[in-house]
Amino acid sequence: MSTDVYQAQVMALSKDESHAGSLPAPSASATVDNALCGDRVKIDLTVAEGRITDIRHHVRGCVLCKASAVAMSAAAIGRDAQELAAARQAVSAMLKEKAPAPGAPWTAYAAFSPVADYKSRHTCVLLAFDALQKALGMGR
Amino acid sequence: MSFDVQRVRAEFPILGRRIHGQALHYLDNAATSQTPEAVIDRVRRHERESRANVLRGVHTLAEEATNAYEAARATAARYVNAARPEEIVFTSGTTAAINLVANSFGESLRAGDEVVLSLLEHHSNIVPWHLLASRRGVVVKFLPVTEDGRIDTHALPALLTARTKLLALAHVSNVTGAVLDVRTVAALARERGIAVLIDGAQAVPHGPADVQALGVDFYAFSGHKMYAPNGIGVLWGRHERLAAMPPFLGGGSMIHAVTTAGTTPAEPPKRFEAGTPPIAQAIGLAAAMDWIRRHDAAAVEHHVQALTGRLLDGLGVIDRGRKRIRVMGPSGLQGRYPVVSFDVAGAHPHDICTLLDQSGVALRGGHHCAQPLMEHWGLAGTTRASLALYNDAGDVDAFLRGLDQALGRLL
Image 1 (cartoon, chains in turn green, cyan):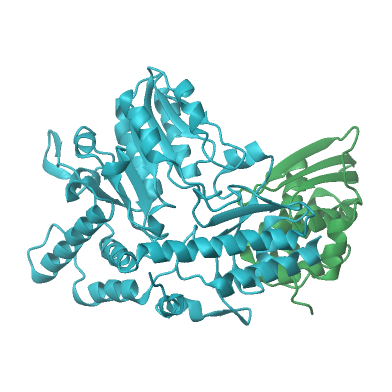
Image 2 (image 1 turned 180 degrees about the horizontal axis):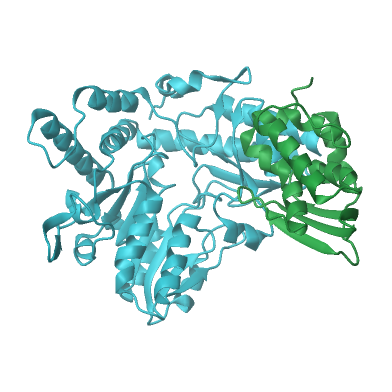
C-alpha cells in the first residue's frame, strides 16, 4: 500500500469537478470551517424520504479537503443519515486508529489512509463529512 | 565580524534528527525555535540540584531556587534594558502578558475609551482587547496595513482621539516579518498621553531590546521563540504603570497580607505573579538570553539577512516569471526580520507544508493566528518560512528545492 499522502488517486479526485458548485433549491445547506487553517466547505443537499437525492460541494481548501468532498459526494447520494454517520465513523477510525478503510460505496477513502500519520490533516479529510452532517442537522 | 554557523548548529542536538529519512531543515522558528545545549543543561542542572519552590522556604534548595529565579529576572531586565528588575513580570508567554495588561490596565478604561491595534496583529494581541470590549464597552480600532505588509503608521494620527488610551502593536509581524518603527509611533502616542504596549515576540529572538529607548509602557515576549523553554514569557512594564495597576490573578506570592476582611496586594512584580511561577523555565530563559548575547550581534544579523535574501531570491527563481508566487510582506531586506510568508496561486499552504515535511523541511502554513490580515488579503492562509541564527544555506536550499518539487506535483 502506498504511504504517499498525495498519491495519484487523491490528486485526481482533487481535480475532479463532479458535484462541485451549488444546488438551485437545496433542502438543506451548511458551511463549516477548519479553525486550524481557515479552510471552508459548503454543502447543498436535496433529501427525499430521508435519503440524499442530490448534493453539491463548494470547497476553499487543500488537496485533501477537495478530494474528500468529491469522494464523499459521489458516495452520499442514496444514503440516509445513519449510513452517512457510519461512513464518517469508519473514515475517522481509518485515520485516528488506522482501522481498515471503509467498504463500498466508500472504497475511494482507502487512498486517504496515509493521512493517518498526519494528525493535523485528519480534519481536512473529515471536513466535508462535518458539513454534510451539519446540513442534515446531526450536530457537527 | 565572525559567525561560524556550523559551530552554532553543533550546539543544537535536535538539528541532527532525520525526518522521513531526510536531514531536518527547521524553518518554523517564528512558531518555536530550538534550544541549545547550554539552555538544556542549565534547566537540567536546576531540576537535578536546586529544584524547590521560590520565595517561601528557608532551606538551602529554596534559597538556591529563589536566587536563581531572581537572577533570571535581573538577566531579563538587562536584556530589555529595563530601569530595574522589578519591572520584569514573569508570565507563561506573550499571550498571558498581553492578557495581564488587558485585564489589569484595562480596569482603568471606561465605555467608549479606545484601544488601537493593527490589522496584522497576532490573535494574542486582538482577542484580549475584544474580550475587554465585551466586558467594559471599550472600542477597538485597527490601523490598516500597507501593500508590502507593514503597519500603516501614516494612518495613526487620524485614528487617535481624546478617548484613545492604549496603542497595542507588534514590533515585528509574525506573518510578514515587517519591523515597526516603534520609537516614532511611541513618541506620537506619548505626546497625547496614550500608553503603548508592544508585542515583541518576534523581535527579541533576534537580539536584545531597549524598552527605555523605544519609549513604550509595556513590552511582551515569549521564551520559546528565543531558544528558551516553553511556558515562560515576560511582561516588562514601566514601574509607574505597574504600580498603578490592580492584580489580575489572585493567589499565593502576590500578596502583602491576607485577612478575613480582605487582601493587600504586594508591590510589582510579585503583584502579578500569583501562584508558583515557572521557575525552571525562567532560569532557562535567562540562560537563553545569555547564550544569545554571547554571539556577535552584527555578524548574526549579517548571516540571517544573507539567508533571507537567498530565500527571497530563490522564490523568484522558482516562480520563473509566472507570478504564481506572491511574497506577502516586504520584498526586500530593508525593515524586515527573517519571517517570509508567501502565497502560491493554486497550491494550498498545508499541502506545501506536508510535502516539504516529507523532505525534512519544517514550515508553517495557515492563518498564523492573524485572521484579520488574511481576510484583508482574501486568503485562507499563507506558507511561512522563518529563520533563526542556526539556519544555514543548506536549510534554505533544501526549502527551495522541496518547494519547487512540491509545486511540480500540486500545480
